[in-house]
Length: 260
Image (cartoon, rainbow, N blue to C red):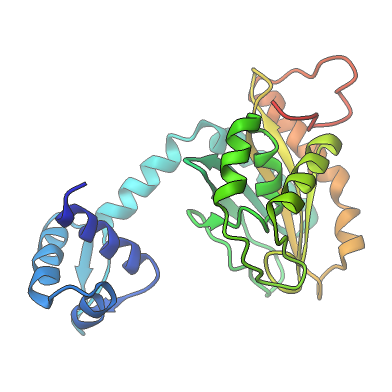
């Protein structure tokens, strides 16, 4: 990758975190202001960034258009949408759809809770590989050798006292989730946030996505969240069915069954 392209991509990533001034971008990336300004002008001409009246830079319309097209190309997102909307409506809780790609788990759709408390998660955000319930589900669908590569490169940083702290712990949790067909996040990713997730399969039986319900403990306790699990599993089965999955004999009552 050329140095200019790499710098431009880093600028876009920084603007994805919030607006920045020229000085802030130059300082953040330790690059001279004239170099950053040249890149910003090119990005501005192509509508990937725009500058407001205060001379602060933001992500531009062209980037949002590409993002929208990228989401439209994800077939499972369209397949899942009506089911996720119904699950969100019936439970009143935050519902996510996530996929695994390039060694990362990414949220590709989200339906917000009716409650005023909001999750940090958003569409396009990467989920914690060792903290999120959707990640445990999706890692359980990887071939063993790929799973081991992922486990080896994770930085097991604890964000709460409950966060998984080692490859051994995560491997055991992934295996457990694969065996029972669902996974939980009991305040492992964010304090006071609990989550339960289930896999979505395609016609080949492979796990292609994970769906989840996330709830702050001031809204529902962990035990009350688990009472929503049957609705979650039913939704995962319905999405999988629309994606072409047909469970083998003995699998009809569960969505997840082992690893692929």
